[in-house]
Length: 225
Length: 246
Image 1: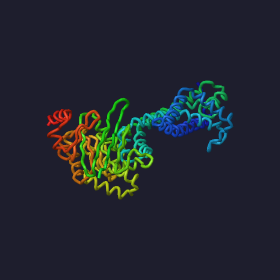
Image 2 (image 1 turned 30 degrees about the horizontal axis):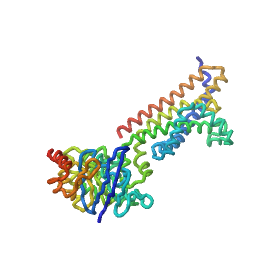
Image 3 (image 1 turned 90 degrees about the vertical axis):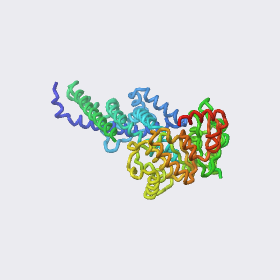
Image 4 (image 1 turned 120 degrees about the vertical axis):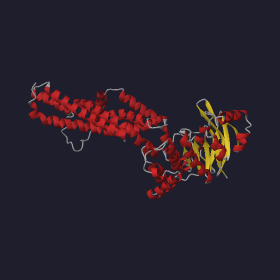
């Protein structure tokens, strides 16, 4: 095995890693937004909202991410929606926006379940006490339930971030210059079909391993708090 | 003046008929103890008063206003005037004692922080826990938690206090401290409805005792009369069982 190509091509891996991490970060960030709203729908007493959330979650979790990605990537332009360039990244990274949207929509369904479980793990008495003082539902949620649910949620959210980092490799298919895409480019340029993949795998592993250690630390911290 | 008037209150849990046509009056300044075997509906009745439990039918008039009348009255505003104390305390675990007590007055009554803190300190003095202001619920004993929970409810200066088996989850040696706080409160003229298993408390402090069984009020009257000469056979049966324990 010969890794001497790294001297010439290291920037491919560095840039690709940046795009991968950024993509995962924004996907989870927007996913959290979508997830909170869906989780609130799901635990509400409104059958209509509950239904919307259930259908969304079941559908997203029941279909392949690749299909969802293609639906967004080919479908939205077909319907007349153009993907804007992502601020700061410029134009030479491919349709970063399409990747972020698809991954967010996907992640939102999983995050919703994380939030729902986290919220429902908070003792019912907490909500009752807040309501008995006269606090409206949303205020009770915001001030009493969510801060406590967050303790249950944070580790699971970290895991979701790890999952998204790994699954994000799929966006290379639509030409986003992420780690996987760039590794593939290096394979082509150097006529080395194998070694660049090893490099990519090691980078993915370093990111996810570091993250999971970090989450473990965080969990320990919270147990003592 | 009647503070709470319950009219033909019914509550079903699915097919289970847990409250059957309950009528009840609570006068201002009155201390009413509700006793009865478990499953008799007494906690459900109490929780219907501030609609933590949604009544299936009937009406509840609080200070002349129907708590069921969502069109004209905000239940959240009515609840501010009905303090509630729970069996499991339900202190907000992520907040210290001071924050637990001041949160609602600051958020709901627009009290400024210093003022709310002063109110809280007075209340903490009253329940004998001023030194615990910075403690978190996890650092408190059950009895301390319950006294804080009472202080938290009082911080909204409610017109009535609802107690849902406030001493049932406590170790025996903690019960006295909580009961003392409640006795003081009664002596100050607070209107109180107390679901309890503490027969001695019901006997010594309550102005009126209500015995419930299978969703009905089977007997009510002043404690002396109830404890010494119950009329209803089921009331007799219940009292003989619980009083024999002493």
